[in-house]
Amino acid sequence: MTLRQPKPLSTGYGRSLRACVNFNKVHGFTMADMTETPIDPVPVVEIARLGQHIGEEVRIQGWVYNLRESGKLLFPLFRDGTGLLQAVVFQKNVSPELFAQVRSLTQESSIHARGVVRADQRAPGGVELDLHVLTVLQLVPASDPYPISPKEHGIDFLMDHRHLWLRSQRQAAILRVRHQVIRAVRDFFDNEGYVLADAPILTPAACEGTSTLFEVQYFDDKAFLTQSGQLYAEAAAMALGKTYCFGPTFRAEKSKTRRHLTEFWMVEPETAFAQLDDIMHLAEKLVTAVVARVLEHCRNELKTLERNPAPLEAIQLPFPRISYDEALSRIQTAGSEMKWGDDLGGGDETLLSKQFDRPVMVHRYPASAKAFYMQPDPERPEVALCVDMLAPEGYGEIVGGSQRIHDLNLLRQRLEEHHLAEADFRWYLDLRRWGSVPHGGFGMGIERVVAWICGLEHIRETIPFPRTIYRIFP
RNA sequence: UCCUCAGUAGCUCAAUGGCAGAGCAUCCGGCUGUUAACCGGAGGGUUGUAGGUUCGAGUCCUACCUGAGGAGCCA
Image (cartoon, rainbow, N blue to C red; front, side, top):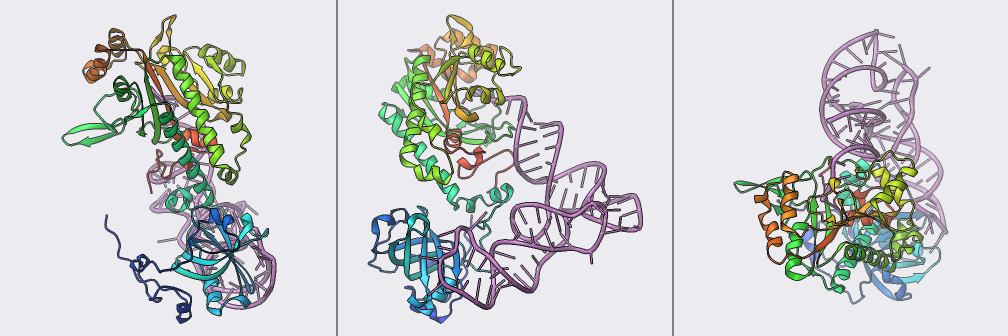
């Protein structure tokens, strides 16, 4: 990709601005000038931490969020990625140059601002800045204004401008929650003694053979983008005992719902010597830890998102565990036409999850509806030792896992029943030839967890640049 | 893949088959505590594309394009 040579930018303030800025070249400065950081002894403070600096002179660096004015009084709103700050400029208290400069600010112009922090109940956030000095790094020209106004927009427009939409308070809050969710996942597994061993993203042909995969050219051959790291995680678990992989996964199904992305992130622990009960316990501990972390670190974000924290505070161990058979009878009682052997549809999942105040784990599905590698229940071979965790409030499946088949001959038989070529799974069968042990794990979809925790209508807001069936731009 | 809906000013949306409009944004003016500020004024249009019906189409019909909601699919 070639970078466009930046054109000289007109500040539009004329000669008077020179007194107010620290840059030597006011007129026609280029982007390169921004690297010449002016020497200023006043400390830069993040907006979120201004409450600890009442009465002090500080600098903030950020962008213009909005400008309100009332005659001789200006209220520019700045954002810096940590929060929003209202600044105040009285015409009588400042130079005519500064007043004119602030008055000409446009949305999303980049700035350095210096002033004294003041507590004021009238300001959003209770803190405001008495602005003394303003440096404009780039003035957004009025002839080409920032496209996303603080007013309402349609989803098509916002998705086309996703690269700018991220600057809104709401989207930034979601990304902060996502950050804490991922941090919590990594810390959780670290504390539990799990070793990160990532799976490849490029996989050979016919790797799992169930869902639709994206095909890519691999030199003179074909390859596929991974739909799950699980099979590789099993190999790692035989090496490390407790392991997990965490990366992007890809599904080429033409799903078109508020719960699906074609590219999403999944964390997949795999544990040697684990059985179904161990897997369920690990999953409920993980989800509890993630929710607790968000409640601890993201109260402001949940407030921005207007997400009621009460249902999240109810997420405590243990989670209810019900068999597929019990789930089926509950769903049928609630009016569904579902029959034994069917997988749960989206509506069925919602019916069931609304009966509980925390995630519910449904275990022992009919083996015929599940993947080839799942261990059959020794007491009822027609069901598999597997579990799906359904999030509350109708957010659907957030965890899917199972105990894996550890017997070589049974696995061979299953491959044949699923019309999968044994040659493609030679390495996977090897894991059962030398030192096979009972083992299992699960996958947890990060975006669905974030959507549930944030209380979002649609999963597309949970990832910086969502990929859906009809959208791959920007 | 199927069903439904939408596409009109930069944005969000109006307009019985009969003069294409409003709010916001932008520009100009007013206002010394605004809270998506407010008040007054100005500029801004190939009504998604291509056909068709009609005296006359943003509106009705056909096809296509681009999206959205749902179903199905989904370790």
